[in-house]
Image (cartoon, rainbow, N blue to C red):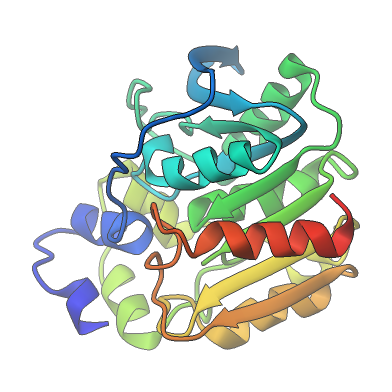
Length: 258
């Protein structure tokens, strides 16, 4: 926790620490034919990278990040026989910045992307904010997804974060749009996530910014959900261009037959 918060001079930096502090670029060579494009949904553009063939998997990055944070997982899932779409969420990555952000808008964006691409019950992996978006999507549009995997997601703010981080995050109102979203959203309830019917693997690191009890709260209240705490890991250490993530996802896919 000390290492994560050290050097933060503003809440914008805190926002990036929350969801992207461990993320870097992968320099691996892409063995598969792939492409990049921009999908236009809900009056915004969503830049994305696509790779592979087979059952569809959507990857969603964390707050202030981009699809590049998950390019190792993108490549490895494509090599494992999946068609992978790694999106930049609205106003982030390669997309023009916006004056405000809301998880429900981002969930609607991904839903419209799924419709635009004609994807049939895709699986979604979401890191941090991306996990929040995946859960919110299935709450808003039941039956859309075939599976959900999250790392470091939360369904509400107060009481979901480790105390030191929560105090720092909520110390005073921010003027930075992405931080405002972190301070005030998501606003889902346990009753909301009980409506999620697809299989779901809800993960967090042993040393995460998300409380282990909150991770268990989510996983245990999704009817076909499970919670898993990853030993020795923090918020993004096993996710951001890490070879540790793909085996976790593939193991879950094998378990549920996806």
